[in-house]
Length: 219
Image (spheres, rainbow, N blue to C red):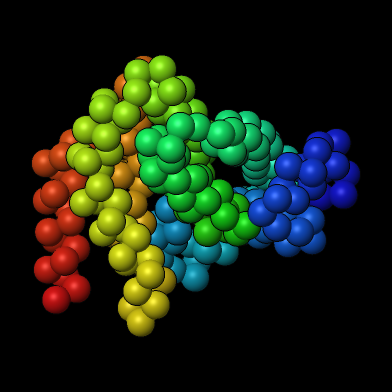
């Protein structure tokens, strides 16, 4: 990690959300997970399968660290740009919309985002950040009415995510909740920044059905 040519910039960009020591540790952990476990660890079901993956991956850790560092750089550069935009003063009538975007930004890029975000979703975070940026620009240009109508569509699903995240008694979110949480991000893209495209099919109907299944499973 110390040999990364972008390390100093990464440290600078990471400093508003965490310390450089944790960032370096997370880079190595994320690179190792990606290399040895892949994007879907559930595909490794036996000791033999794990040993086969380790043997195939050994010696490639440096390249994996660079790949994760490149992803982190893209995310942190956009995070800084979006954060600066959201910190600019706006008319009071727009402050609740901006506060919602700040909340979204903080949960997309927390201090442990490299290890907390599944590898299958990590590469999509720059697109989610770009969607926040576009939503903010449209809010300033087109006003509150359009933004509020679209935010109302997202609200029940986003609130379900926030409630689950806040439910410490239930422990960490399982895979089904994590998928649901990122489908909400895809839904936001489809509403606020359609031109960015979505990674998977998503709609209000799909989210409503998934949310109902999650609630039934928790009952």
